[in-house]
Length: 532
Image (cartoon, rainbow, N blue to C red):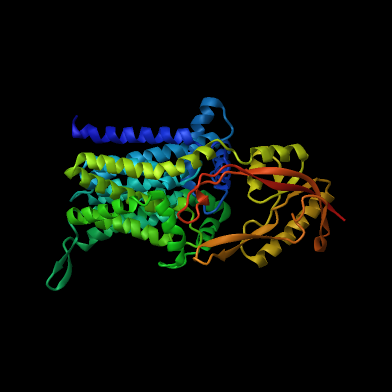
């Protein structure tokens, strides 16, 4: 077969296989709170023409992609819920990213085996597999990061500016999905100039081989695209809510410094679980091979991996799915390693690839299989709908998002948005006044047992961070009877105990351990509120 068609067909085959895998494991329902926010925003964009994301820090690029899928679904079936469309969109994004990894690795290492291995490993590595089996934005981010890499890699003398513009636009769309994408700029610059460096080492020091204006134009194209696309997509949201998405992103990131304990206590164990212990030596071999034969590639992928790892790996709370931008260059380097082995012994390369892929996917399979069959909140939501009036106002934690979306009940403001005890007390006071107002107006009010609590951040001895939920004394301390919230003059009457099912997504990893989790029922009590 002609090489011109072989690589695209290989990318298509890997992408289709990745999509089938994701459809098998596709999660039932929108159990994740962020997925609910996304569904509401997509529905608003298609059904009401209002393009405003409802959950900071924004992600308008993801809303645009989800709206496209939902628009097609809505036209074809008349559906008014975006749940299915945005879940499938996440799976499709994961499959497309696997196919793009084939194309980029083939170009970087000039070997179809490198492309096949990189795409396969990305398709099955647990962090990426998990986050592309339910509705989230990380698969879409991966697609546009890889597109930026492909555009930059294809740069040739005389056409670098065009490549820089295309790479900048792709990077900008990635940044409109997840803002940390802009950190890829240094790696893309190296890819643009990997064939012929614009800098040379002369006797009198470093010297530019090309006019400084050319280099400046390339930097401007990358940075300009990375900023222009998000600015345009954020415009309507900024007009509606100001700069809230950006301030929220900066205040919640909690970057601890480049070498914090979070890196060793949280990030590296999560990556080890995703790569398996066999993945690390393969990654190291990929770097060595690239450095010896393609130093521009080695430098670009190392910059990509290290910059993303230093930032995302040192956040106060590192959720494994946030590490997708780290996983991408790692899989590309692993693909290069498999190709290097294959040039010596094809059978050994195939065996290594199969063993590493199985070591990745086998432990996570039962976890995702369990999760795919479970919609953790459905029974709880049905119970709430059965035990509350249609005009009721319900106060709840994250479950409130699901209550509003599935039952149509009004959900009151609550103090979930803060991890600060002082601000929490003020928000609770405001909420109690709101409750009193609803009751005085004749509306029934219900409160879940975890409604008024906040997350107090603490540290384990190993430096990893966790949250301890701290609530108001008297709320949720007993399953029945009356609980007096004295200073507010509000009494909660025990009404019904509901069961909420948790099924442990990949975000529940602790350290390097990964155990298949089975559904665990947890009591969630619903109280009727009254005033004295």
